[in-house]
Length: 214
Image (spheres, rainbow, N blue to C red):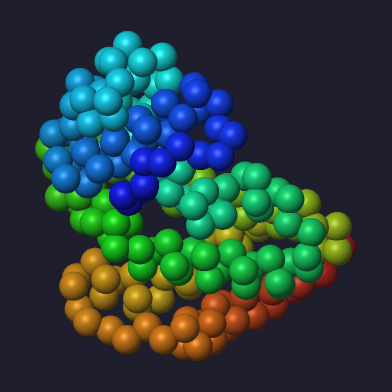
């Protein structure tokens, strides 16, 4: 998840410091894992004081969560972009689907997944932090988006089930193969077809459930 540590145009000084810290934390978590990363280490990598790190992030858990959120935001899988989407649901789900697959295929995201799996038996809360900040948050955002569609009235339970179907179907074989270092040739056209099929299934279910709700 290496992010270039250059000042953002017009970014306030406090935000620039926060950005530096997030970049340093990302590098540290990838290289040393969650357990091997300390706030002191992040401060040194970021070129700031430990007090500055704590002024932006309450503790290492909070910092880790923000690193995961920042990576999701890089692929526009965050509250701002999903809540502001104005296209038809099918178009929005297609766009999100491609962004989600690209996120999963990001080499540093794959590294982070493997790091979590490697630490899950020794660092009890790392998997929960990772899941809540990434997968669980994504499920919630898409479920909330579906609930706000006036032409497709569904219950909260149904919206969450459809969101789960959406993300699990998008993962397909690509995600598992990437976790196991099995080579695969992911052509863009093939990924687009996979997303279109997934969205078609979800939309069929959404229409059916909304008709039953009516």
